[in-house]
Image (cartoon, rainbow, N blue to C red):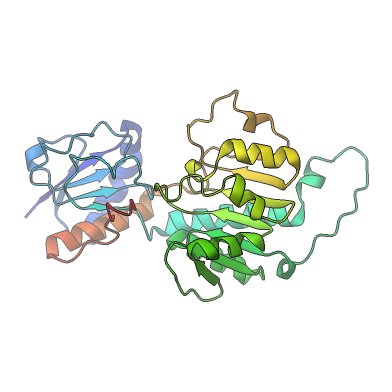
Length: 311
């Protein structure tokens, strides 16, 4: 039996995803009709990006699942018309590897003080000996698939890694903390903080004036997670005062980041344009195909979003 799969994302993405999705579906043994347009009542699965034109799911009466192309679901999880299972993009090898490379790269940049030499080509011989990795504690806020992978990669390089999550976890190579007391402990010893939490009401502004003050003076912040995790005014104040040494920011409350935003011109801020990790069509297609295979076999879907938790 042929399953009808609607690709509901921006038109320019179709060229990137059409062949990988068809190949992954065929490899999974699924006879599928993959298109960008169907009559809603015949659609079995929706491959979805929250910025697509599909915002009302009511007509999709036969749809078995909405399969998100992004790890983030905050722009769709509250949609009251979406009553089908919603699955996040998790365990995508390309997405995970991209995030690990961004986090490790910028952690090493901050740790080694690379900017001193990259931006200091003015004839002055600047001597700087950074500590070794074992002397540079790193804290990761968020221990989902991406936080776990980044934490273990950094631990493998010798950094003492502490991870914090809302619920207690056990991960090899990472000291795991949870709860309010655990958050304070995780921040107080961190010279570099990496934000990899989802956007939920509980995580919004998790770095604010109070929690930023818990960090040791000169601490550095990397945010490839969500822009809403940081109180921007509090961070700018902490940077100006010198309490925070540098911030590398990849996600923002409004994207693209407005041209007049103070982050652009701040000497202690690095802006990257939401590139820490993007969904790679070849690897994402395999995740999508596996969930469709599961749906057709009557098996549980992978990475189903908990609507109450928001991720």
